[in-house]
Image 1 (tube, rainbow over the protein chains, first blue to last red):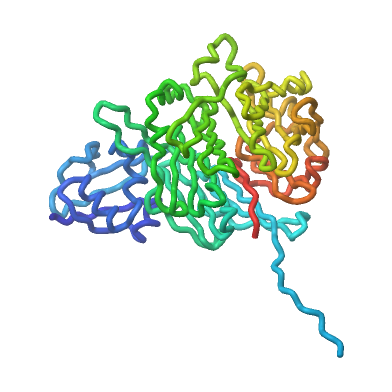
Image 2: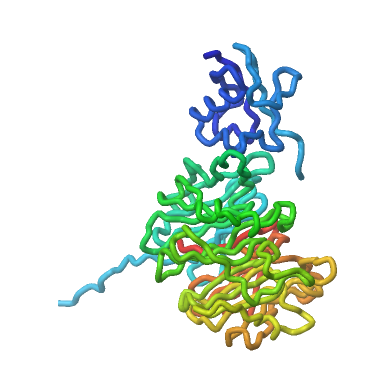
Length: 88
Length: 385
């Protein structure tokens, strides 16, 4: 299982305790499930019952936005979890 | 020999208010006489808090429903009267739909109700969109009440999500009969009032006599919009309801609602969100009317907020506005934001969309503001500390 780096936005740092964490998985979905095992509850705040990313969550590798949780991730990649600018 | 007076250490009971707001939760505690109040720092500042409720079977336990603008919904649990909180291990979530079925997605948990007094650890949660969940371990894990959430007529009852109320369609007013743990009522906006006699396995609607928006067919359950359903603990067979289309009463085992709001002053009308029933007198109930004319401003009629009380089960209503602003007050009291304590005389409380809490120590005769400058208030619940 490959290790990737994940940057966590501030609303989710109450789960991880820090911004930068490592997680294992070869797809986005596997990485999020691995994170949820270590930080229970985190995934459901990001992904709904239909396995859809919640409306204001965004995922990036570099400058490329990911829309599919089945997107493969290369070992050593950095997955950025971003909260979209919205609300008031 | 003289004996020293026996020194008792009976703890004083303080009345509390659990305040859920659009930007966090707050706890208010009184001085033991409901005269002065202290306010906590915000809890979970920035989180959208829909309901905070104390467990009457174990007052150390509190549950809080939260989400944020970005993050999905979850529940928090305290076992030390709100000093510390932990997240539910398995918060409410709709189960995976069967192949070809519609997958429901929980937006937030809107309503929390402790289970029957004999069922310690049991809680019910009403959701947006409409859904009912039960916990049997004090709120740590939650299961879908399949008899309702997977009812074959679910779509016919609820209608389409975009047709729901402005803050999303919701299941609310979960009532557990204090005489029978298997006897439940729920209300849905939209979807009507429903009853279960078998702890949620099967349900039947209770909407006879309820009006719906003009020109529509009241036999269509998704046209029904009960705003708040309550019973008096002194007589659980007497139900009161503030509906989108008036104020109603139902005396079981009857099934025909009576529109008791027709006795309200015509200039005020009988539209509103909350409903409060006296815990010891089933003839007494309060509403807080709002403007349901034209485009439905949902503010106090004429900018003059007032509670209305009935002392005869809805045959007549009296205005209670002493102490409340007498003009230019354009706020709303949402369906969970008016409540009562158990004191004698009864204490009444209301929270406004403008972030004020108003309290009455004398059953609504006099009101005074006990907190202001809070975020928009979604819910108020009494508590004991």
